[in-house]
Length: 162
Image 1 (spheres, helix red, strand yellow):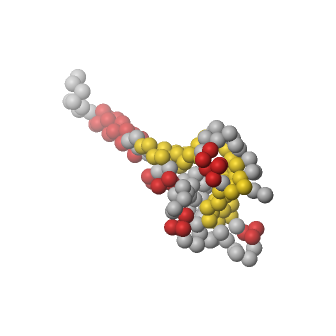
Image 2 (cartoon, rainbow, N blue to C red):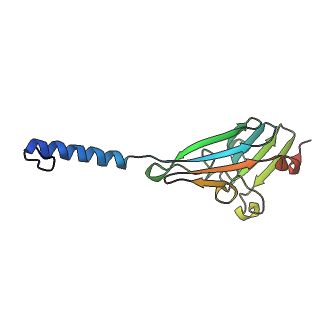
Image 3 (cartoon, helix red, strand yellow):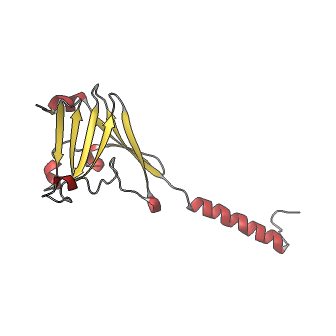
């Protein structure tokens, strides 16, 4: 029997079901972007992201924060869904809330990004909060990888902790 000559009603229904299954599987594809921080130093890095703008200024305990720990010469990465199942972009769990960051190097030095009053006030610095401008971006057909590198130069220019 010629494949194109489907005559029975049952054959047509089976073919329809197969076509529907193939179509549904192609629509349910989930793609991910990867957001990474590459610690290119020999120092352990602690990144504290917190929300000053959205917190109760009187009660310091109400400041939302999250911490990322990166061992020397290591990469921290998080995958976030794109498209219909999209998640907030960036290395933090809640990047749209995080407005300030402290980056600690072995608890010896610190870089501070406090951008909540005027986001553009931080734009003159290499800013971990701004993945669109300060991350290396590599994309394929369906996803992108964003990498923020922390280098020895960052350590050298960081503020010494007393």
